Length: 82
Image 1 (cartoon, one colour):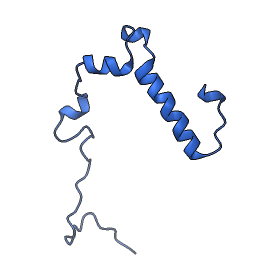
Image 2 (tube, rainbow, N blue to C red; image 1 turned 90 degrees about the horizontal axis):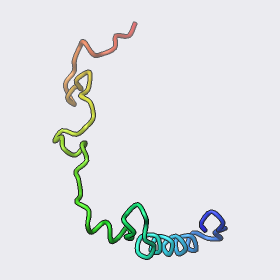
Image 3 (spheres, helix red, strand yellow; image 1 turned 60 degrees about the horizontal axis):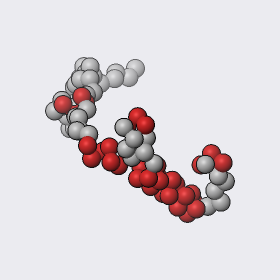
């Protein structure tokens, strides 16, 4: 349905997409969800924490080099001109 729709305005697109989303999540049952709607299934499933959320410091790797503090100079990290 949506791939055949030519939206003439952003407001029209928002209305049509809102109706589609409501139909998809609240009205149509899905076979992979045991013939429940996504909204019904969401109530029954247990949320699981993502692995990235388990680490207090975050999931990004540690920096290779340390950053200098504002107002402090590090003669080894400064460029020499000339």
